[in-house]
Length: 208
Image (cartoon, rainbow, N blue to C red; front, side):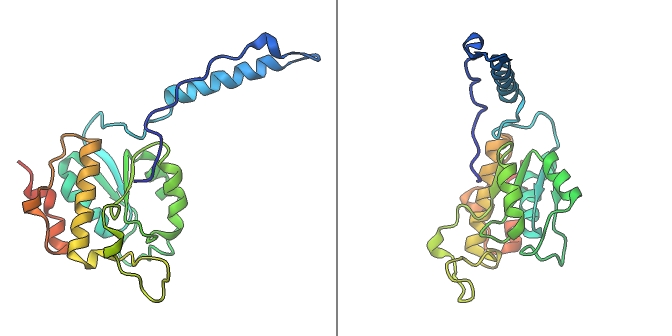
């Protein structure tokens, strides 16, 4: 998961307004205004650990394979919006205005990671300041990932071709959704998928 602060910071103590008066300019007033702004941000900035207040909540995903996992694990509890349709190259993808608007409405975001989404990475980093943002590949042991000759120093991001690796992606989604929404059913060890397609059935088979 892209790291964001868990809780809004405690508002700073109000400045000593009188200490900054002088020179014909009330510097203290500016300090007081800044302090009030910090208090407002601390009170109203969304928390990265917020939980859904109603169902279905909104989850936004990037590539289709990630979208499939999240839809199956979250099921009816979430409206899942996939940004990249069939035939779109995620390495070259640049979010449109509508895509950015969808991300801003999202309560939780999932992406593949390992640099698959390319130019979208900067947007995801900024988004993680205000809501949970997770890479589904974050639980895959680095030593099990391939490093193609044409990508020295970087892992192959197309991990859904490896059933064992993609099973870890399913687990990452299950853990993230459970932390976000405790009512999300968990995928158990006996249900771990053996193929990329069966991975998307994890949430469905675990549902009561």
